[in-house]
Amino acid sequence: MGLISQDSFETPFPRDLVGDKSYPCLILNADYQPLSYFPLSLWSWQDAIKAVYLRRVNIVDMYEQCVRSTSTEMRLPSVIALKEFVPQSRSPAFTRFNLFLRDGFKCVYCQSPKDLTFDHVIPKRLGGQTNWKNIVAACTKCNFKKGGRMPQSAGMKLLTKPYIPTIHGLQAQGRRFPPGYLHESWLDYLYWDLELKS
Ligand SMILES: [Zn+2]
Image (cartoon, rainbow, N blue to C red; front, side, top):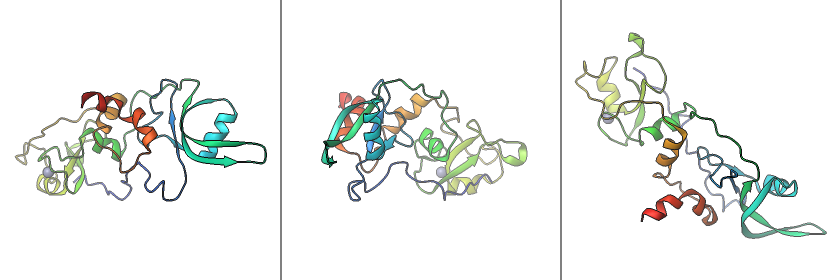
């Protein structure tokens, strides 16, 4: 009960960016926080340069790579910051990724990170809804064991209760799960709080 297919679950971080020479640019809000973490706010170098010419952004850091036109030459921006602050939405989107992130990519019943799927805590047939407060990350084994029952009827215990996360909470959680690839000039803006602790 409550199984949701995982086929659209994928990492929000692009891979092999250096390999295909796409020179993505990290976009920061006017407060120098990434505009978004999930997915990470990245623009193509073409869009980044357009924004620079329109004077909407400040260049914070650059790649070695240059682009040339007949009259000018410029290094590709790797980090830019918006001049005007864009307010962020207050509650995060109810997505598969955000839900796994809230639960730390672990089953709420046994803490296993393997074969994660989703469980309706109150089963659908008992009126359980599909929302932040009733969906948890659960491994396939626990999901199967629980079946269409309430946790207590199945002799199972929720180690963490489902709740509606804040953007800030998810961002803090996200820093514990570094993506496979980040350009070095982005690190100061993504992981500065981690570096202070170590
Ligand atoms: Zn489990």
